[in-house]
Amino acid sequence: MKKLNGFSLLLAAILVSGCSSIQYSGQSEVNSESAPAVNNKPEEPVASFEPDTLYDLLVAELGGQRKRYDLALGNYLKQAHKTQDKGIAKRAYQISQLIGARQASLDAAVLWAKLDEDNAAALQASAIELIRAGQLDRAVEQMRKVLALEGEASFDFLAASASELSEDERVQLLVTFDSILKDYPDHRSLKLGKAILLLQDNQLNEAIKLCDQLLSKDSGYVKAIILKGRILNKMGKGGEAEKMLADAVRKHPEIPRLRLIYARVLVHLDKLGEARDQFQVLLKQSPHDVEIILSLALIALENDMVDESEEYFKQLIALGQRKSTANYYLGRIAEQRGQYDQARKYFLNVMPGKEFMMSRVALIQMQLRQGKVAEARQQLDEDRNRFPAHAVQLYLLETEILVNASELDDALKLFTGAVLRYPDSVNLLYGRAMVYEKMGRIDDLEKDLRAIIKAQPENAAALNALGYTLADRTDRFEEARALIEKAYALDKEDPAIMDSMGWIYYRLGNYQAALGYLKSAYAKYPDHEVAAHLGEVLWALGRKEDAKALWDEALQKSPDSDVLKETRERLEKQSLKEAGVSPESKVSIAE
Image (cartoon, rainbow, N blue to C red):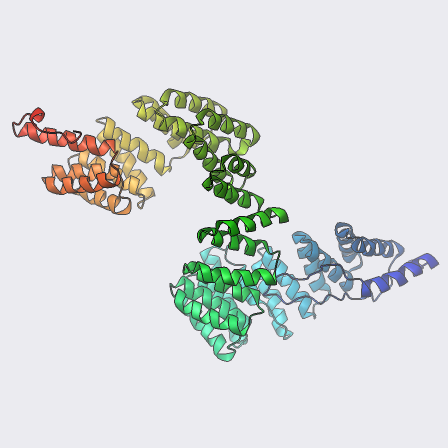
């Protein structure tokens, strides 16, 4: 150890004073409700330090005072590893928590626990960071040590962090929990953690039992109340959850998370007015909580309280939070009021993210209703250049405009240009294939769909589209059946594929098999095209009155359906012809 000069001694004196007294503004430790806070008072250095170390620590403290937390963290973490001092390691952890530096938090917490292995708070902090890093086995090991020290290990937080695990990994974690419970059968965090794992595994009755055991010993155990409310809601017992949570909120009005889960249950029960009241209480408790403001905005909008909703959305923009979400809904509100220029400005302020394409679809639909087709297409072209990551989606949106306007040549031209620009886009190839189908260019359709299937052999949509087209527009029935059956094996719940299965069996003359698939398809998706197919099979089976009744029902829902009208007219004319009656002597369905 180097001998300290006078200046170094002065630094040491300042450092000791600073370490024991400086508190960073807004500093918080472990931000999880489930995790106990780490004591904010840092350990004072208990050993002499070299001048370089003292200098780094002084710079770190001064950096903290001046809110240069990155500088403070870097110096503390460096010196924690160099000196192996538990107080410095703890300080590094505190600062990393403050600024949300996840990797640094893991590094500092693990080092702190290693250097201070009899400190339950250090072990707890390392366990939490290991959980966040997905290292659950090491986290469990650390929590076992906390239990051995009679500390409060947050097994519920560990369990909550396991939601992204595979089913096998969750099962293994449950086994681990059961093993620890044998040694600590009355540990409530362990029981609560197991209940959370059971909820994740959809073992709801077992999870409820554990909650009830916990509440029988402590009826005011808020975490168990919240978890039971979630489980009841998932079980479809929203009324029971509401009653329990309402009582808990009356007893514990100061606990925001309890009120929050109560408000969400009310939303689930469609009691939006009551939910709004609860969110307003939460907003008074936390006036700048973004999620609460957003919830209030959406609830107000759902209740047709448009002015109130607008104010909340504008509040989000003023706070600089969830701006794209707020701009999207403000655009819808302005459009509803007929303020189209203002709506356009709001929609264009939505940046890439969840609401981006929703905003563009809303904007384009608004412009089309105004007859501004050229302006809509120009806007899409500008957006493709400005946001190239969304170019494919924007191409698809523009081609939809052209297809709906029956501008098939323009749609094909745009698709072809887009495919040249993005040759690996399956969506563009599929879209172009559908345009080819409308143009009757079956060979070109097959070429594009075959290209998709070559790249993605298990693309059920492409397999189904090609199989259905071959069944409907050619006599290559066996080839069509192989494609459709492969699609069905990949996705047995898709009504479009069920419809194709029914149609290929009809084309092959197996009417009973066709009937079963088409009934299932129509039950899941009562679409006019499925109704046309199902009616045609019923007609082939001699059940003409059933077919007519089905078509009548479908035409009430889709009075402009050409496929329904064409199918019915074709079969009725064929029936008259077979009966020797001239079709011209009867009034056709079209007339």
